[in-house]
Length: 195
Image (cartoon, rainbow, N blue to C red; front, side):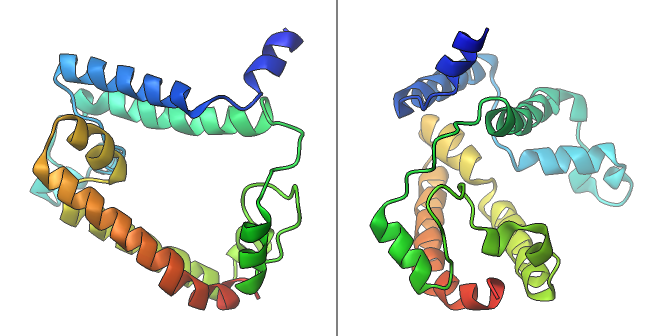
């Protein structure tokens, strides 16, 4: 059993994920389903009774059960990957990335993990500036997903696989927004969030 855990806890080539995503998309296409994670929020709101207040939430939630199971599996898989299958080796971060993080106020020691403690430890998450950042960011993500008619996974994986032009436009917009946030907006916000 330990040999199996040792094997699966090693980093896998990216093509394994790509192949599994392609197989999943093929199965969904054959079943007439569309993939998207943000649609789970609508399903969960429907389950909570939001359909009594808005027609938008009056849907057959049972038809989306598979998508809820997928989202739950993603959370469970992340938990298993970080606990049971965690690689004890330090995270390899390039010197350029470490230098950049230092320049924006994040001290990121080698092997500290994938996320900086200056932003993600519980003490800092409870600070008002970080809460404001999370609430505004969450609102913008939700607004953007609703406005674009889906989230990044729905458009970039399902929509592009179905050759939908609106998905191509949305994915281009997602990338432009991500670049602007990463290189222009986030560096000016990080000093306030990492204090």
